[in-house]
Length: 461
Ligand code: NAD
Image 1 (cartoon, helix red, strand yellow):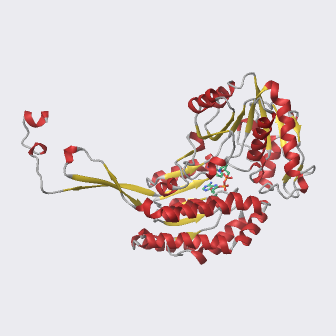
Image 2: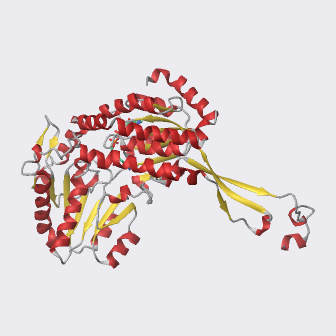
Image 3: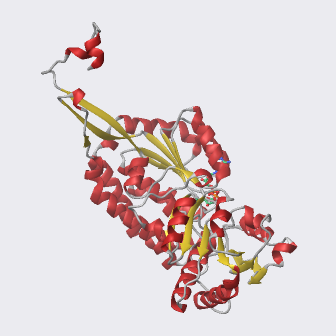
């Protein structure tokens, strides 16, 4: 949709919300079913767009985008009546006879900004929450994944109520124009720098925000006595590093912490799994997504150009700008003040940091901004508890990577630098709802202590 018509579009969205149609369960379910049909009928086009933008294999695309969305839609459709129902609460005897309830109401007209790495999933999953909660919505997909952005702009109007749900395409100038408007909620997925811009624009109108940001997600690998367990743990770390969009994932493993004396075995295991996943020449593998564009390719290239960082490469390091390929690369103890260790990597490099004791990982992690996800591989229950209790992050996953993202019963979101607010499952519905307090009293009983004239007896009651 053309930004030229933004005023008109806003007026139409406001009118749709004011008409109260988006509040009905029927409207919400019709839209959610529309999204279901879109995913079914346009599956091939979705794969094509994801391949064009990111070289994503269709199996990975189904697992990480369509599959996640189908699950969200099923859950929302099956739970909507329950989520929409008001919830009775206990009220104190002082208000007797009274009943209290919390009634969820939609926020109004909401704005969703999505990022490019899961350009369908991260656009439509928040939209499912916004619709389930009864809002009108504008979706602004990331311009960095243009095929997926235009897929959404072309198809959403064919399947959803175009007067209440709109897709507006474009880059920063358009994002800035959208941010000048008054919204009832802004839901943003992207980096922390832009997150700050969103928050200050929202502050002008006291608009609530959810910020789904990123950061450096650490994985701690303790030693397992069984060879099988060691192998499974490394396999899961390799999947959590390279198996999602070649490391271009907010929940992907950013760096790995291991005890010094186990590092060389861990590196051999990682190489072994990389070979099983991507063969002898990963450039020929169709299971590795490509770096999204030249800008990000060069950003990643710069991360390992520093001679001290380059010297720490123990595997990989080759790149091909023509097809935006970067080989899975392992670095052993790069300098801690190098950009690769201070900035989110968001690409296929895995720095391994060695420690004298695995317990030192807690202090290491606490010296950095809070992560979106923290992974810890250990059978030691005491160490598991220490990691959970003594660190702060959006989530902690024990003995696996990424699966927390697919669990609708867990809130998904960051803390501190990694984000503000949460979504997924019922948390998405709540992110786009206001829980209105409703109290009903009877006129039958009257208690005089609540009213003047005051006396000592009334105070003591
Ligand atoms: P991006 O470039 O796709 O930007 C996200 C959105 O912000 C886009 O719609 C874009 O148009 C808009 N935008 C960009 N610059 C803007 C500006 N100056 N003013 C207003 N809007 C602007 O996203 P990105 O930052 O490159 O994505 C990568 C980041 O997103 C990483 O940090 C990653 O960890 C994070 N991320 C987080 C999650 C999550 O769920 N927490 C998911 C994916 C990515």
